[in-house]
Image 1: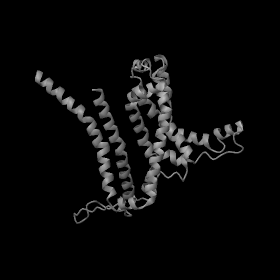
Image 2: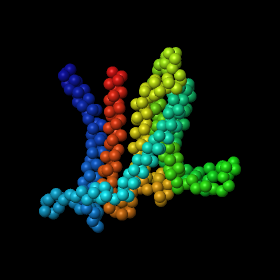
Image 3: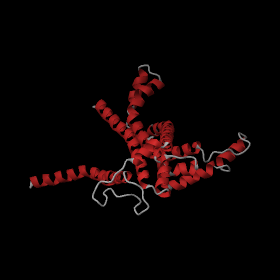
Image 4: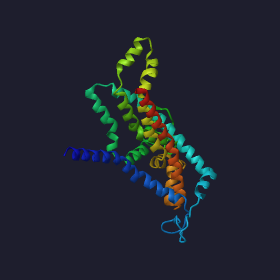
Length: 298
C-alpha cells in the first residue's frame, strides 16, 4: 500500500515538472517551428500564400532567399536597429522612474503598501487600446498638454507632440512601467535594511551605500524588470502606429504590413525568426545573471 502511494506521488511530481515544458512545447516551440517552416518557403498567390515544404515529387523544397533579402535590404536593418534603440530607451526610462517608485513602495508602511500596489496595477483594468487612444487626446495639437503649455505662456502656438518619437517613448514608458515596478518591488521588499544602516555606520555615504548595498541586492529585480519591458517593447505595434504615425517604422509594424498588407508570409516569417533570435540574447543574459546570483548567495 505504501509503495502504491509513493508511486502515485511520484507520478504527480513528474506531471508537475513536465507541465511547464509541455506548455513551452505547445505554445512556443510548435509555433516557432511553423513560422520557421514558412520562412524557408516562397510566396505564391494561393491559399496558403506560400509553397509547401515538400513538393509533389516528395523532395524538400526550402530556400534561404528571404533571410538573404533581409540581410541585403537596408530598410530591415534600419528597422531592427531603430526598434532596438527605442526599446532600450524606453527600458532605461522605465528603470529610472520605476526604481524610486518601487523603493518607495517597499519602504512604505504595511497598511499603505497594498494601496500603492493597487494604484500601480490599476491601469491594467482598462483596455490597453483605450489607454493609448487617451494619450492621443492628451498629446495632439489641441490636447491637454499643449493647452497647458499655452496657458503657462511657455509656447505661443501648439507644438507637434503627437506622431513623434517623444510620443512613442511616452506611450511605451507609461504602458510598461508596471512591468518594471513589480519585480523591483518584489526584490526590494525582501531586502534587509540593517545592511544599509551597517554600511552607513561604517562611514559610507547614502550614495555609496546605495551602490554598494542596495543596487547589488536589487540586481535580480532590475534584470527581470528590464527584460519584461524590453522584450514586448521591441515588438510593439499599437503604440508606434497610433502615437508615432506613419514614420514610426518599427519591426512590429513591418511584421503586420508583410503579413496582412503585402501578403508575403515567408518574408514576414523570416522577419519574425530574426526578431526572436535577437530577443534570445537578453533571455540568455537573464539566465546567466540569475545563475551567478544563485551561486553568489549559496
